[in-house]
Length: 110
Length: 114
Image (cartoon, rainbow over all chains, first blue to last red):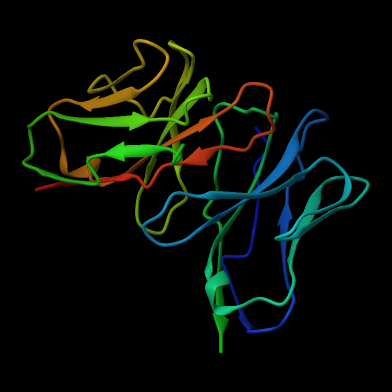
């Protein structure tokens, strides 16, 4: 399973766009890239998933370059409630044996 | 459907005791996962069921741990002879076969072993 590397933490201010980049140099051809969000004392929550290029939903955008060795989660105009841990995962869809790393702790300040 | 539920939410036990946790997945989901999470770390995969079959089991899951999903609906995770190192949040998630890797997580059971 591909290993991922993310920044340990990031700070931002309300209203700013936040970009969190994840490296996954050993991603396999069939692997998808999935991002989850986790608040304290809650289980993770699915945010977005993609295979290549760009994916956008009501919460975030996911940018994946052609070589797929990295991906960037973009959160537009963050608010205080976006303070959470964000996890980048790579693996097969419907994937059992899902591997979470340590994630990126995002702190949004007023 | 209100999502994935777990019971109990908190459990305090003495070292050496057995504990059992329950997970009720979203009803139409046939895949169920168990994870363990310690403070400051991401969830660690423990085991995975498709319907009632346990298809994957992490090496983290020692012989003291056992999980079942007898009718392909709810699941139980039992820890025998608990140790202080078992103290963690135990998370359950479910997903629908054929979906993307979109797992729906429960609120977790926090275990404290004294």
